[in-house]
Image (cartoon, rainbow, N blue to C red; front, side, top):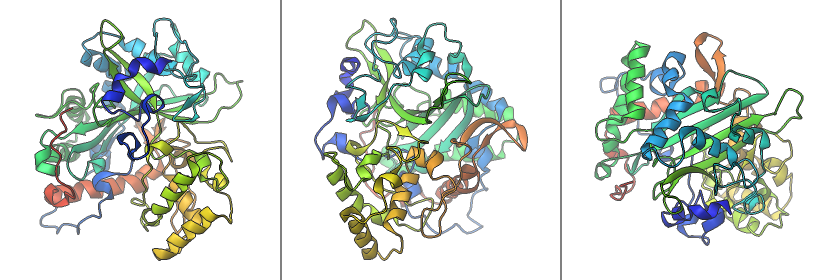
Length: 491
């Protein structure tokens, strides 16, 4: 099995990446509830707004939270990112092109490409991961072939993202900093994205969140830099060199290859294989970049398929499911009703132990396994009744289906498509994506020098992240610390 040569990651607790090979019992470290997009200080109730006399300069979201200017993004293309990762590994093992091809060879049946031996493939464990389906995707897998016309140089950056709002409340990390790569130019039948989502360690965890203040100030400072080339220089240094005392954002240990398995690489896949090929569902997947030093003369980086976080397998919502995990999941889900019922579109949330997370998310097929509302059904059932009783206990007027709609909205497929522009109860409507994505490879209609983003980002999520950043800058980060600072984050 391709995963066997990566058993070292089990010893450093990258359980999410290797769940099929080293899954632990319920309650073990492998069963923690990792989060990808709603966690950290963004979920902590905010303090009062600062007084005008103490408030920092306002943050410009399009300079300090999201960067979509093509003149800046040209420095962050796919080859630059993959080359940096290979250089971090001492230039041994795979080349940048091989590492890119290895990512897509995971979508092919074993044994895969001859020059990429011993790597994970979609057929490992009978086309399953974490005990849930993991289908092959040969259209995207074709990029692994030598001589493929779609290759590493086909990918350019379409967005840089500041996710300081995801910084751990105890200051053990300083949030996520992302590069979204897309296959360019835009082709409606050949869309594909690779999202590099680095979690930046706090070099001074003993200071709590105050140790992260230089990162927050770096991003907020970009708002006052009007020259795009000057901002490009600063961002290039932040991502590839690092702030003083901080690691560079693009580093081989920040995408999962660390004791806490923090960081990930996610893909949004929609290759039809040609204009006359049959439609395929939009598929979302997650990977950990791991480093193996056990089976080769030189250590090798490789992308290992991982569970998709906050993405329970849809079949677990079926009250009549025969899956052995369904009863435990449904009991756990009832304990999460109160946080899902929160009357705040930016902060309703829930925790999903990794044993319940799916191997993939189909964002498109109506009534499919990832359609939570279809799996849940109209009721009645004991599961519906238990959710209803918990809603009554917390004084919520939501219905059980509203709660499941909110859980679906927090899944990758729900956020990208299934819940786009649809009600989630309590008078709230989930904001709209931009045709399956939030960061696009098409021009902004108002400015052809930028890539377009979704209405959800522009009108809902960026204003919230702006508030989180500005309120942090206006006060003391230590005031937000809700747990003792960690001191064991040497990665």
